[in-house]
Image (cartoon, rainbow, N blue to C red; front, side, top):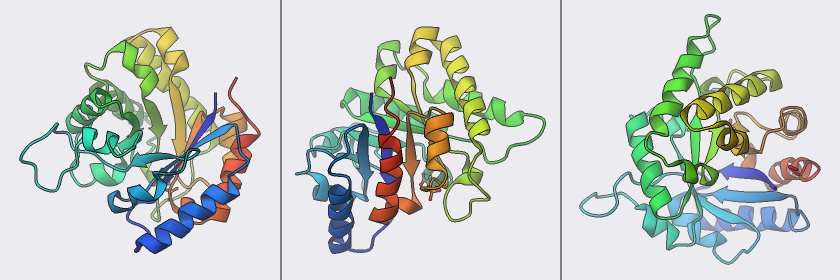
Length: 253
Ligand code: PEP
């Protein structure tokens, strides 16, 4: 199975021209890569830049929790799917900070699956307290976000463990590979309790939070991550393709 390397451009770059250049350069630098699947998630107005590329898949950064109707400013899952978008980031901490609850995230996942979009479900705690309260926070996120999602659909969901303290400009540091491994085991245990061990074992779990070309290898090689979610360094094609190059060396068996 290919490693999944996701570029989350957030609200960047400012113009379509710049977006086209970044996309083109990433496509060029990653042309020969075979063992990794690149998914670029640009802002909505730039989604068309990736439509003609066969190797790079398109993802959206958000989707409505509603199916259709009077929801001004919203973009529905089927609109995205009809626009050749295959993935969607759901529950990113920057959206949760705007008031997105686990219940809204759950609705978005259910409707995205109905539209045949693959959700990239972001989970992660804001602090790692020594008492381990963060583990029950993650448990709630998993239980509530996956509520009523049939077992057969778990293969279509990617879980991105993104501790909030490691994400974006305000990050304290990236997670250690040990912290990622601990969380991966914990998430699989939670999913095994909710569904079964087989489903939990085949669950795709990726890491996100201050990923760069210096730390990517440890998450992929030692942490055996199924992939990486990259924010800041996905806007610089050389930096991003250096991360993909590392993933290329470690195809999942
Ligand atoms: C993100 O946007 O999900 C992210 C992980 O950002 P960064 O790589 O900049 O920490």
